Amino acid sequence: MIKKIVLRDDEMPTQWYNVVPDLPNGLQPPLDPETKEPMGPDKLAAVFPMGLLEQEMSDQRFIDIPEEVLEVLKIWRPSPLVRAHNLEKALNTKAKIFFKNEGVSPVGSHKPNSAVAQAFYNKKEGVKRLATETGAGQWGSALSLATSKFGLECKVYMVRVSFDQKPYRKSIMQTFGADVIPSPSTDTNTGRAILEKMPDTPGSLGIAISEALEDAATRDDTKYALGSVLNHVILHQSIIGLEAKKQMELAGEFPDVIVGCCGGGSNFAGLAVPYVPDYLEGKKIRFVGMEPASCPSLTGGKLAYDFGDVAQTTPLLYMYTLGHDFIPPGIHAGGLRYHGMAPIVSAMVRENIVDPVKVHQLECFEAGVLFAKTEGIIPAPETCHAIRGAIIEATKDLNDPKTILFNFSGHGLIDMGSFDRYYAGELKDYDYPEEEIAKSMANLPKI
Image 1 (spheres, helix red, strand yellow):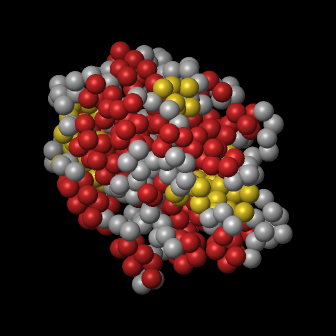
Image 2: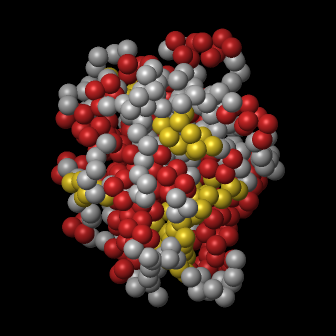
Image 3: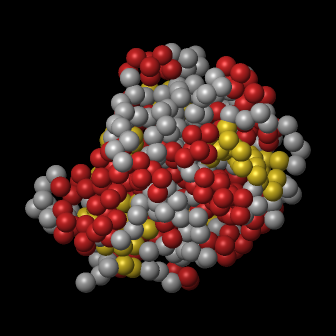
């Protein structure tokens, strides 16, 4: 009985897959927020290195992974593909459930797949320091690891509610040499202005992004790094699905359903996009994106051009959005608290390739606890959403022998405070009021 499949180091993919050329009807270009015209790389070069901008706008289907990046990735990659036999048994289902375990990375999530690449390209172009934001702390941890590997300084603006909820994420970042502060902060004009208006705000990824962008734009030695949403991040994360395809083939299986949690879109897309060519060639695959009911960009938002941040400094991206000034509630899946969805994932929803589903945090924690008891791994609150999605798919028809593949995007060993609150009955389900979403979306840019 196969439990897990692990590829050899020399079987790790040496190229990333870029889904953009294969997307039906393509992507809308990012727009300059001042002129509302398509934005070229020149203006973006103030905050991103040219190597990443070339990837962001590339029409190449496959891009070589630099040897220096591969060497760092080999610390934990290839990651295991695991058959969840015990979960199947507990559900009394004939479905086969597989998961790609990205929790084996040094910081416990999929995020270093892109952080290592971003640190490398910045180092290559002489950048000395990176500024970034982080929600749950997983991206900040990953970039701190990556910058330590390539000798860069790192400044992390961490969403205040997560800064308070997840102190050990901060400890991880500090261990790798990063400077981490709660956002909104007094270190930037954006942070000071927001604190003056809303001194008790829990913060948001949109605010933290504004602070990190301001930091990068006001220093000559600093560039900005983003952990999700953008095309080059999803390109780097495609290594997840490329490995999974090899591993599923070795298992003699092909997924009928692919599931992932959706915040900005990177871990879901990383697993899903390498299967898009198969889908377009006629393979029957159901792609399911699980998002929190408290921050439902795909199921409650609008496909429109919007800013990626509160201060309206980012390019305008064509994506599903709840509005750039949307402030989500402090649910414990901090990595899913973002107002917008990656343009690539948004396009896949637009083309009816991806089916978005919203779920509440209590049912997700319940699914995570069942997974821990059956498979022996405690999942992160974000990952619990993907597990819930896999369980929903496996129990629709208990006699359907379909094959389900989901992305186990990270473990929860640094999120035990969230589980403590769940066991104490202190967590509540929260549907964001439609009238509040409408109010936020009323401020979308007029394009």
